[in-house]
Length: 364
Image (cartoon, rainbow, N blue to C red; front, side, top):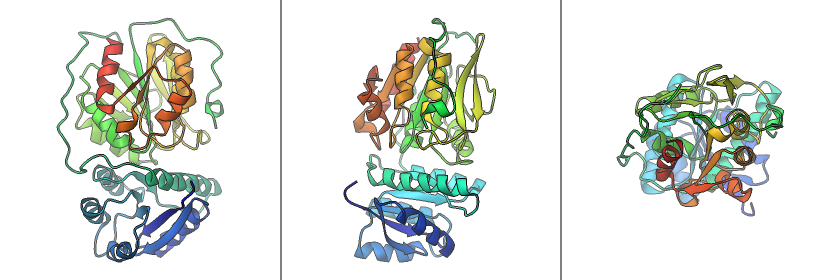
């Protein structure tokens, strides 16, 4: 990045502001424009200079972060990264902020374990970089109605990824009647997944999902989707069965693998190092889908920064799976799909609103 990302940090905690300054200043592509103890001070600073990205707390005096975000998006849209604590209430509010136009969620830095500090540094800096290139596409907070797709099935039978799962040496099993859909997304993916899942019929094929998101936020995210979708949506737990009409979302900070035992597909949730700078990693999920589902899998790579998922999607394609990428026009950040296309790992490219129909057609 040739031009530095001018960042405004808004948080009522002086300790958090200082920690964020130290973390972000260490990245040569990021520059701290200013810090502010509340949105009123932040608004005054924005009048004098417009930042590239705002890192925004939620609970603050004089004006809360959600109110400030809504005013900002209606008057002067600027990419916003929400910095939130790992509380149930904080998670729900942060997810609501994504609907209102925030680009990413990061968890507040905690000083302590060396590994946590280093991984937190990577995640925070990457979130700010992703926000700096994000495109605004919607009038946030005002959803357009989405037409549900009809049921298409009368009945259905029941640092690379090497760090977590060794490279598959053999082809997976022969084609069966049951399909499994593996989906990977990052920046902009929370709303993209909502739009994708909301139109699926109740008997859609089983789906496993990796969305880059901090620990504890995925549970609230899954519950929110479960309340608006015709399929059931839940945060994946170890040994959960992959079933038609259900989507399993990788828990934050844990890798998700697809496995198969006889006719049963199930998931494994496990620890491990960051893969492609992420945990969970799309590459890990896709490699496991290549190994255990092969021709019976459909891989989908959606909006996101970086290249996580590109190599895994190539492995899926080589194993006989059908692979789909979201197109550039509908991506908030056209990073992960673009890298998959560059690697010739993609069979088809579709706008977001057409991906569900493409999957149902392939699985019918």
